[in-house]
Image (cartoon, rainbow, N blue to C red; front, side):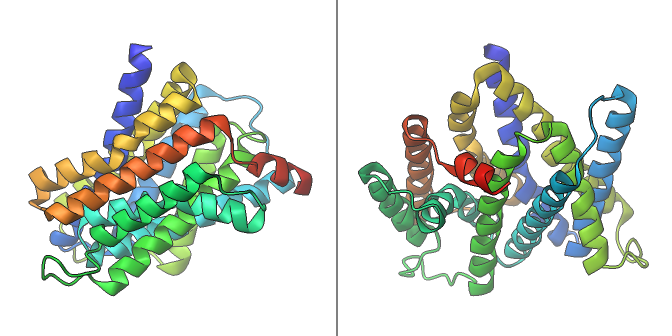
Length: 302
């Protein structure tokens, strides 16, 4: 049981460190296309290597599943693309808090598309988290600092893509093992990055040391390690405890951003971040009693 908790905490640290590496990369002069390319190239290469060494069996993918995996990869690419752009315009801390509003979007989409009723708990939680978001982006300009509107837009867009990614992921979990889904996602993201940014002289004109530090950091520390840690912790603790424990991710980002990047939040923004985290935690606790009906609806369409 203790190992399970430690694994989930390790995964949260890895995911929470991603915006730190990206922001640091921008500060060192690296471009978004280079960071996306290096992240998915290294992560894909490692996963293919692990697949060959482990000689995993039953890894054949049907045509219908392949289409879903491709869509899953494109959704994750859209999330990463928007996320990296948001960090370019705003602090790593605020971007991460905005991304973490994705469970709220899942609830809203379940009501819009699957006609799920929003319970009193979910309704109150949505209001709390929404108010928290207003404080995080300092909408009333309490601090006197202006929040970048492009950064805010891309931050919300990344959360939307991630919400859709999680919805589809629930369906894919019944059709393919987690490693196959993760490896396919990384490969699709690499191909999508190459399509958007053809890798012609992509490594020229940049610091090679910065490239390797950011590339290996985002690929290994923030992708491969947390991916395996979370899946293993999930098996040991169960989905409910693992999901609740992962709520610490935004808090980890706040701490790391403060120590490494020197980013600070105003008291109102800290309060807003706390409200968002509390809102997400309440949603996850409520979900234990009334699971979202995505699997049932998606299975009817498969």
